[in-house]
Length: 456
Ligand code: GCO
Image (cartoon, rainbow, N blue to C red; front, top):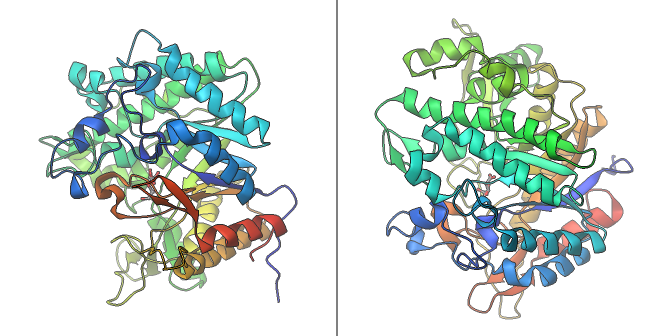
């Protein structure tokens, strides 16, 4: 019997992102992001929802930090909105926008909570979309680096944990496409290559961003990339299936073209071959810029893909989910708890980064939360999900992989991108009519895990 005790110092946290919670879209000099514009077009999001008000966290951050204290987290991951800090994308810094983050971070620090700031969680300034089509242009990378410099010069005295870009694939491959893209800016392009060029530019932005942060930080700091690789999970743990899952990690999702160049300095050769004419143009020196030393890698993992060894040219196959396979309240949210373990292990063994400290920067689920007549949310489904996934985290830690902490997505229900407010991922239920925060059962359960430093 294991008690699922975590080692001393294991870091427990929760995560959010600016556009999903802040609201105050037009306040204190903020100008529109691509998500304001995109969600403002009827039909792009469920019920026409936008982030204009969201959880009104901009005005309620004080109360939200109190909730964090009740929860017991000592680490909080949030993002900084580029269009608040540099409303036109480049040029003039809006000090009033920076001040919001000063207030927030001071409040966190006063409460013993370490801030982990993501510089970009998808809300790029609309001005740059107009100027050059955002990620379609290489200029986006230099503008991002300048924005990173502006933020770190101003906030680097109180923030020492930085994350560059969140989930490159989601704002490039989901924001640009040959068919109608689901994410902002929602740009149709002609060729697969055009899409791959956008993620290549994002990789460059990450690399230049790392250089900018290091140059601007007044204090020693830790820099992370946050990625959401597709996780291959061996259907059995036979040596053959494990080898198959490791091999398949290169070609699963977009791994070979995103996490591979970021961590190894090379697009995975097998993956490049598979891309063929869709591969991006890579200029001399790009890969060196992209491949910056990292202090931490952040992994966002919600699900996984089963793989088995077979006797074909590749030696593996991806398995479909059978009818009736359990999932939670998103079409892609298949319950595959082992993905947290295998994601961690693949970084060590497939990407050959066994010394790189890792954080789970997001894990959690949407459930069909309903308020009971007594005003409670009894989300035993979320607890079931989290408990299984945390066992997988525990296994990775116990086996000695350098996994240092876990951020639950999300602290509170929020604007779930094209799903609007229709999907709830929070530990705190938000009543959007009144902006009341109601702790769900999972909130109390997670608080107990943190208090005991074990899976409760
Ligand atoms: C991410 C997304 C989050 C989503 C969450 C649930 O980083 O994965 O940015 O913002 O809300 O993943 O889909």
